[in-house]
Image (cartoon, rainbow, N blue to C red; front, side, top):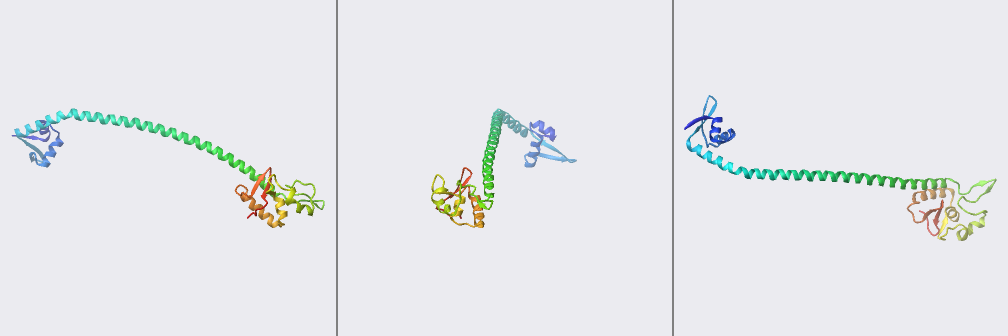
Length: 218
């Protein structure tokens, strides 16, 4: 029987000091404590058992090394996969940026064309439908006639002031046929302005506003 300090006992038994303390806690090793220091009581049986256990653990080391290599290979594969994913992410990001830039330019062009059309239409609406010069009324700005009198108003709805499709008449003609007051004409202008791109009853052709003859603008 021997009495050894923890470090010597670990060397003698072929295990670590932590293993010695674990065995002390489990009560599988006898010990005495002197002046605050633990001494392990070792007999020949404990030594034999520990050596056998060490031998068994030593035999298992190759298996542990294989598993470690396997894990390391898995880590390397995961790193490669992660690198590929990062590369794909960067490529997708660049493609998205390119698409956004392209769409932005297309949207700007659409709004530019729409704004040009809207500005032209606003300028058209700002002009008087009938102007007066030297005390006489002149033809409306969007009516292609050379003379204007009261009888012409009755004939406009049938012949003079229609578009290629006879279902459509010009804005000025529409106002005359319906005897709209200046206040109603202004109100109608605002309605047309808000619906010029959406209403099937209104269209803009060659800078001239046309309205469906058989429809009311609301």
